[in-house]
Amino acid sequence: MNRSSGQSGSASRRATPLRSPCPVAGSLDLLGDRWTLLVIRDLFWGKTRYGEFLTSPEGIPTNLLADRLARLEASGLVTRVPYQTNPPRHAYTLTPKGKDLKPVLAALVTWGKRHVPGTKTRAELAVESA
Amino acid sequence: MNRSSGQSGSASRRATPLRSPCPVAGSLDLLGDRWTLLVIRDLFWGKTRYGEFLTSPEGIPTNLLADRLARLEASGLVTRVPYQTNPPRHAYTLTPKGKDLKPVLAALVTWGKRHVPGTKTRAELAVESA
DNA sequence: CCCGTCTCTTGCAATTCGCAAGTTATTTCT
DNA sequence: AGAAATAACTTGCGAATTGCAAGAGACGGG
Image 1 (tube, rainbow over the protein chains, first blue to last red):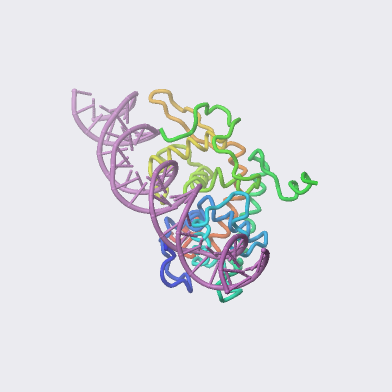
Image 2 (tube, rainbow over the protein chains, first blue to last red):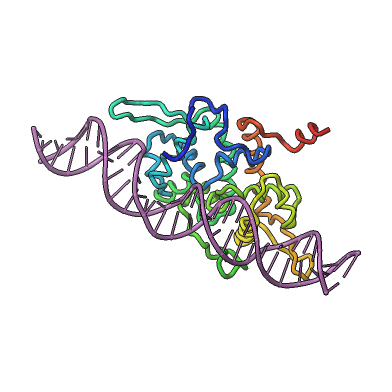
């Protein structure tokens, strides 16, 4: 197991102390890598199961997906509820804390569409394939 | 030398091809790490010189700062203009493309203030120290 | 001329990434 | 019933990245 601390119930004590009191730094401590926000994007798209995240076009490695989901749960952005017991299978969904990231994703979409050549929204891609 | 390719003039050909056409993924290809957006935050605060970025409370390592500034310049988010010739010294400033990240930073500030305990805005910190 | 400042660069150990293969426990074929 | 497929992870490991510390080059001042 990689990390995710002991008591995963409430995120009372932080695993990694804040780098600074700046809200940007604090947010980046949780979200600042190449994959985390992509998993959250998938959750906004309605994906809930492990295998669904793997089908996203970016191709997240399986070990990183498991790690990111565990961290997101540990930090209270995602809930993991069992939808069957044997074998244990879970559905991942955004908590209110996670859903509040919508403006962040929206801002990234706006910026990416305007400034990163080659990017397109799902709506535009749907039109193309028609 | 770490990376930053040869011709740093125009970002015509991308060093790393997009992971997918999704604007979120495309944005994260440029911004998705623990430091890049913090440097951009500093630029929004008006910092322009190498030494100024180093004084930020998060304490970015010097080699990473140099690397991030080079990448930001290579991807057209930041301009590097010499303000003296001997020894060569440069001032880093945001391009319009970089300034367009303001909504992203703003969204991160809003989310961090609401959901990351221990974070405070500069205004709040100023009041405290009074 | 020696010292301090500023802006990076270089070395290197430790962490993280990403690819691939292995595991466990079913459900679906045949 | 036995074989094969599926779902959800875990494990191994080489390669890339991080972060700490020290070094380097170019002045400016005393």
